[in-house]
Length: 180
Image 1 (cartoon, one colour):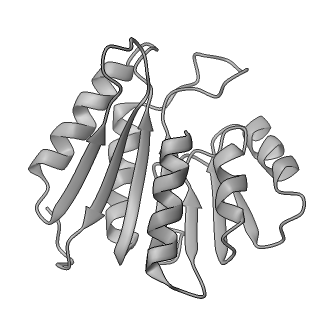
Image 2 (cartoon, helix red, strand yellow; image 1 turned 90 degrees about the vertical axis):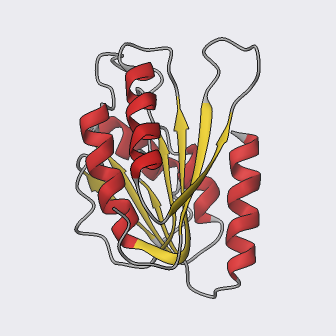
């Protein structure tokens, strides 16, 4: 997570924008939302589980610029366009029912919306956990999507020789609007 936060910070500082639009598409326990909130702007925290929204609100109690959406990450159509950073932590909510997980279907729908909403210099960050049922398939599906999408670039970060270690994908859209 420290690596992802460092990369997000570098990305956001390089944008040199006074008003950012940020999205935590799977806000979970609110740790990433808390990190993003420190950059100001508009922050949208999304999760399908009510306890995730409650935990995130607790983490962000000192910040007034966050909005909370109790819904699946698969439909981001309600969000404004030109999002500077969209982050995902795939898998399940730590400390909760491990049967409630992200799926390749919902994640692909979400990524399609995310790419459409991304600002020209925006970034999508996906932390992929493969240690749960369906996690490896979800990762393969995302990689296949990215490899077949035109006008998208991505960087894949893995930890060598560590079993079940999360992997990170950093995705950017090239200048063209049409990506598929």
